[in-house]
Length: 521
Image 1 (cartoon, rainbow, N blue to C red):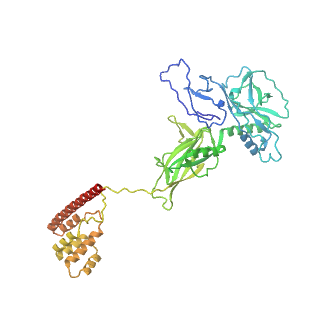
Image 2: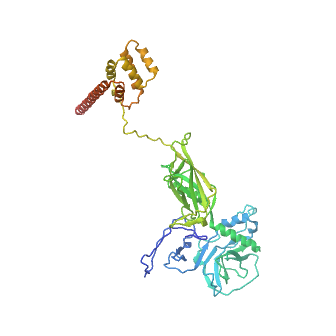
Image 3: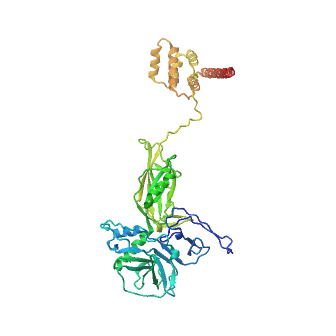
């Protein structure tokens, strides 16, 4: 939707007529736009593109327009000052008019001379001594007053009066045609009231600008100045910042802020509960409609990003350029020596001519190589204590709860085993030789007590969730004592059943005691 030096200030609306019927009455469409527009609202126009890609500019209060017209691009005094500082040959240029863009058929010559009126302020006030060296001027007002808009650019019929006599303060007209600037030598520029100038043209030009000169300047310098100025009005110096939401560090916003309004943009972020480091990126020159492509590196990425998806932000000078993201870590065990997860945001600048339309969306051309990023911003995420969920099969053992394989069952089993059975059972349980020797030293004269110490050592070495009684019964079956295995399982069930009855009785007693206490109160 934007071309040349246009700036988008509202959303783009698509109107379709499915019935292909002509509307017998005018339509009024309300298009809201944000209040960050800094110039006069009367300079806002509505750009209409029909199905045949024809363009028309409609005033906000009108219901229809004609194909053809003009647009005005204001030239800020800061741009002129920057050009004077960079090029010594531009010091003789005092002020300029706004850039005038004409939209008319270039193949049809005008039947009569066109008289145009543009604002071009007189030279600034006299500079103080030493001010010229620092490239600062006492008059820092814009070259185009806020009260002037393209409605005041009038096209009149008049006659051409050529004059080659120039006063000490000269006015020169430059025109853009056939993709290059030309000096209109035959155009006579007149000073009018209210800082207006008028001139006449006989040919069709796409762009026009008036320069007020202190003295004569070579045409080549004027053409170079017009080309540089044309590029500067299309570019904007921006700074990029990433701020986090105060209550949610993983929620961040990437803001592209014009450098001349950086403090105002940071204050707006603060009012929206975003805070961050006062450091921003270096100034980057961006043009209207260009894109910034965002990629992540390190241990931080965005939610839903699997290192293949990319985020893009289209830059519009008169709109809020924010990109809200939700960050997360890639490896929860990464950056173990730091209290934060760390990553980097890489930003690549995509020129407008490298964007192609795909399903009503501007995407980067497949043939374009990204190259080096224009900006790198560090990212951090605080580490949080994560609660580990216990498996469903886990159960907690209380201190007063008996071990599933109690000492009474082990004592009964030790009295039923022979010395040969004990030797085979030790081999089946895969105990260490040191454990067996320790049991023999603790009870040298009692075989049953030695077996008891061996079984208790084996029981304590197993995890608490391991079913010990079925495992011991399986080992008894392997050594040829299945009857002892069946008896062990039966006795273990009886012990568990009695313990559960005892616990239920204790709960009932506790409930009765609590009820009695409440009744007494």
